[in-house]
Image (cartoon, rainbow, N blue to C red; front, side, top):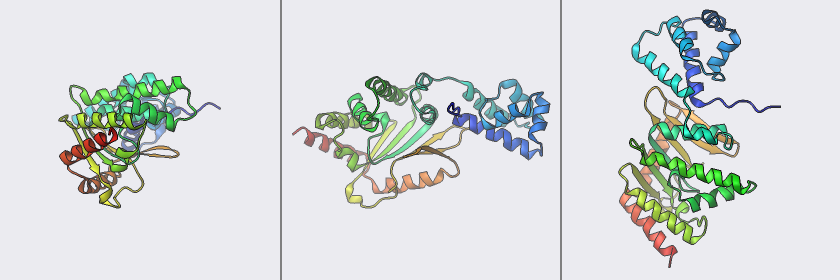
Length: 285
């Protein structure tokens, strides 16, 4: 049996809004399909995101649903364009899970990314040696060629932090991550120096959550919060043994509250940089 087609987050968001507009107008799916002169199953796939709607059909539905507000129409049209737009990351679509393609898209569109990590450093801050060691350990059955591609993707993602309009990237890193010798002592030392270099960027903030903070607000582990411009919602992200989960606002507010609690327990940025530098120096003694 063929694997089901992955439906991107942006296609799901657009479809959800179309369904809400239709239901708010008291219309059935077959009413929308008849208006478009399409089969009801096709109209259903528009709403599920399985088949992204094209511009003429979207404009027709907005007229049918009485969407006269110019800003609302513009937001929905922008979302529709995102559904169809291809990005550099699509070249890796056959080698990573569909959920991770969504993750890279979120990184590329976010105005702010907040991260908490307690096992590995954030991928946006990896050097290639650290990335290779981390990926090899996690994907222990993968062939070297596949690992090469995954490392390449991880490093390519980092371009977003140096783009013309980069996102604000704020990371809270558990002290355990700084002491875990991923790739060996020399690799970790080089990685920590790289971390300090990035902490000096105007759009990057790094805070360390020390062991002395004791129990903290995220015992379940790492997570991300992506804040984007309208029409996109704020999105919380976490990984589980069964795969990634994405949580949209208002439910993503729990992630934001947890991040704020962690931030209160963490060192300030300057103190964090000094702490990281001290660990790196000790590794090379």
